[in-house]
Length: 388
Ligand SMILES: [Fe+2]
Image (tube, rainbow, N blue to C red; front, side):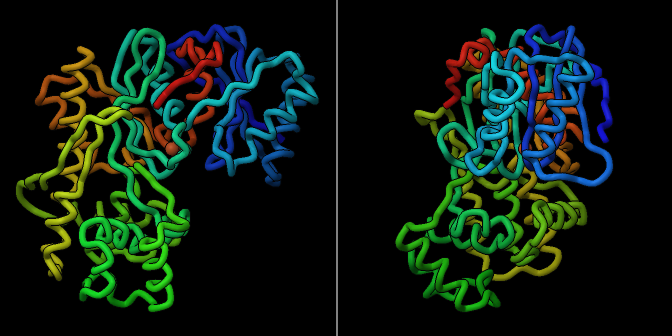
C-alpha cells in the first residue's frame, strides 16, 4: 500500500520532520537519524485526508516515528493545513506545526541536491503557489544567508480575472495586461487577440477588470508565458496547466538566428526588486497581427527577455549581497529554451548556476524541500518566519 524511497541528500538534517508536501503532487516525506525518506501510495488512490492519516499511522506503527515538527503548504484552499492539525491531535500531540511556503520549499531543495552552502540566490519559477502576502507567487528570488531565506525580488503581479479560471483561459491574462496598458479602451478597440472569444465571457472579464472584483494577483512566471501565448493567439484556452507555455516554447524552438531581448524595467519596492514586463507587452500588443514566422520570433525573443530580466535581477542582488551562486528550481525550468538562455546569460556574467535536478524541480520535490527548509532556516524552526 505504500512505497518507501530513501532520498540521497547532501545535507544531514538534524530536526526530525514529517512533511505533507503540496496537494499539487501528493508526496509525504520524513527524516530520521539524518536520513531522508519519501512515501508514495500504491494501489487505489484515496483522498488527501485519508492518505495523510494512513501514512502517519503506518510510520508510527512500523518505525515508531514521532516528528518534532509537522510541516505543510499553508495554501488556504489546500487541506494539508487542516490535515496537519488532525495528525497532531490524533497521533503526534507533542509535534509542532510549521508551515513552509511553496517557493521556499522549491529553493531549499538546493541543500539536498548540492549540500548545505552558507549563501546563495534561489530562483523559484513555476505556475502557482501561495505566497506570504496572500497573492499567488511563481517568480521569486530568495537570498539564503545567515541561516534564513528572504524574498528579495519577483516579477510584477499580473491580474487574473476570475482567479483560477485564468489559468485555463490565458486570454484572460492577456486581457488583464492590455487593460493595464490601455484601460477600458481595450474592449472598445479592435483588439486582435480578443477576436473569437465568446462575447458573454468577454463581457464578464471586462466587468471584473473595470470594477476590480474577482481579480487575483500573481507573480507567476508560468502565467507570464500564458499571457504571451494568448497575445500571439498560440493558445487562448489551455485546459491543462502549462499547455500554453509548452506551445510557446515549441514556437521559440522553430525560430532561427540570434534573438534580442524586449525592454523591461526593474524597480526597488518594499517587497524587494520588482521586474515589470509592461514595456515588452506594449511592444507585442502594438503589433496587431502576426505571421507564423513572426510568432516564432516573438516567442524566441520572449524567452530571451525572461532570462535577461532574471539575469539583471541576479546581478542587482549580487551587488547588494555579494552572492555569486544561483540555484534555479520550479516547473518553469522544465523549459529547455529558457534554461539554455539563462545558463548563457548568467555564466557569461560570472555566476555559478545550478539547476534543480529534474523532475524534482517540479512540485514532486516540494515535500522534501519543506523538510530541508525547516532544517536550513532558523526562523522557520523558531516559528518567526518572515519572507516578504
Ligand atoms: Fe511549484
